[in-house]
Amino acid sequence: MTRESEFRFAWRLAAAIFIAVAVEAPAVAAPLTVREVAPGVFVHFGAHEETTRDNLGSIANIGFVVGEKCVAVVDTGGSAALGAQLRESVRAVTRLPVCFVINTHMHPDHVFGNAAFSDEPGVAFVGHAKLGAALAARERGYLDRLHQEIGDAAAGTRVIAPTLTVASTRDLDLGGRVLNLRAWPTAHTDNDLTVLDAQTGTLWSGDLLFVERIPSIDGSLIGWLKVLGELRQLEPKRVVSGHGDAGAGWRAAIDRLEEYLAVVRNETRSAIKARRTMQAAVAEVGATQRGKWLLFDDYHKRNVTAAYAELEWED
Amino acid sequence: MNHLIFSRSGLASIAVAIALAVPGAPHAQDQAGAGNWDMIRQSMFAGRTIEEDGAKLVELETPVRAEDAAVVPIAIRTRMPQDPAQYVKKVYLVIDRNPSPVGAIFTFTPESGRADIETRVRIEEYTNVRAIAETSDGRLFMTTNYVKASGGCSAPAGKDLAESMARMGRMKFRVEGEVKQGEPALAQLMISHPNLSGMAMDQMTRLFTPAHFVRKIEVTYGGKPVMSAEVDFTISENPNVRFYFLPRGPGELKAEVVDSNQLKFESSIQVKPGTAGS
Image (cartoon, rainbow over all chains, first blue to last red; front, side, top):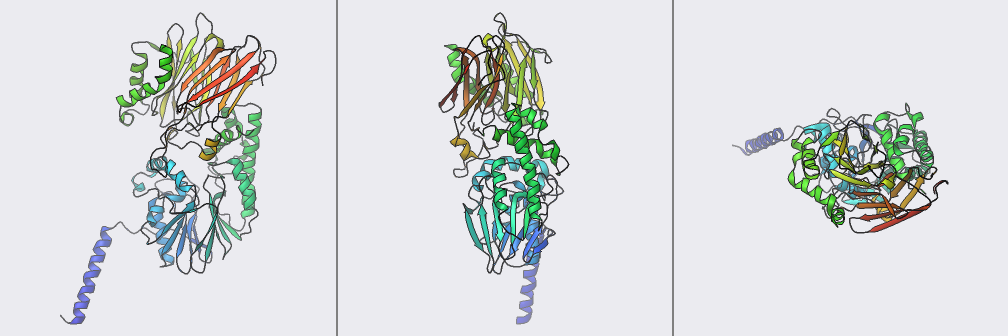
């Protein structure tokens, strides 16, 4: 063999091995559809559905921000399989490494894709200082439920605790682009974190903002209303909400969410004051809100239950 | 003395006996957990007849599907006057497929006025829920409802555990509506307590957060027992009980609570029949 043919042979051998390995490995996931809502900011909008085998937990908004040095993923979707698809979406846009996987809070539809990014060299998983404890306490229940919902498509999904935590604020440098992270007091959950891409004025609100899909109260109703008041003071050009598309119309979206939460607060308070039981309050509170939100029947009564349990201790 | 021994170890020993007897059994059995019920029946009511009376004497109100499995409101109502000659002495709450199926044993007296109870419970899996009333002459009546709920026991206590721990032991105690001499009056006792089930993981240690729950509630009126409850983490975080007492003249309604770490909490209110309760 000439040197050149030796080289060709070696190259072919390497290619054959590579193909064999690739065939052995799980099929490469198809990339998710993403929309570039601002330069370098990509979002996959989740469906207003419950998690099913068909949607693999693609029910929340997830995406990524591309810097000059590396990429930050913001929320990863409701299963490792979906996370793998998101990773392909990143790959379709850039060859830069993923240096940060940020979780806006503990809920499965936002964190269960994390495992798909665990082998990115040097990647940090970033969350609120209370995220780790919240996930640990719920891990078993969350995983059991996912297996019930999507069966063996849940394979590979696991909880990954944050390796970098935020107690108040923290900046992440993606190279020529800085993300400002802010940890909030108990609101939607006790571990809500927002991500501001200062360069484009894009705020990832996580589930502090719901659009169209009914919010779920899993932290503090009163705390959430307070935090919404503070979010109003910010001046982003657009908001990537946890569910639905807030976009530039985010202030109106806050109004609608605030109306729902205030109605639940006010009517639940009245029910407690009138010495109605929890069962009675759950049957009565918030009837005017039906029709204004998708999946109302799946979450509303649970929200009133949570509101009652919180507000009965108010005074 | 017998009573004392029972009250110290009653619920826990029953739960342990059942857990040992049927390791991992729930999954192998039918959806409602009838196998567990056979074990409980054997250990608590061996050889006794239980009338499944179709809600004639004991009525159980539960949601068909729980909105939140960690906070499932239930009501048990009995239909026998608390006459000293014959009255409802105990009400057992059994949740077949829960990790601790015998969730509560309530004790009543003629001074209860009515042997009714309302509370909120945790439910771990789709299950039968049973209310079993025992009369003072030893007869047993049972009503069973099926409830769809899951994950209530393994869910962490508190949407905000730090706040929950800080508030532990605070109580709110009140009488509902107007209290009339010689007529059963409704009282509500709220106890701020995380009621930790011991089934939720701690992030730092990767061990389960130790169980820590209210295990006994004793209420007296004018020094006489009106309702006592032996309970465990089956009862939801911040235990809430609604029950009756029979006011015969002014007196103090007093609640004493002991938790599994031997912490004691007390609360009382002065009641004057004929006036609204405080």
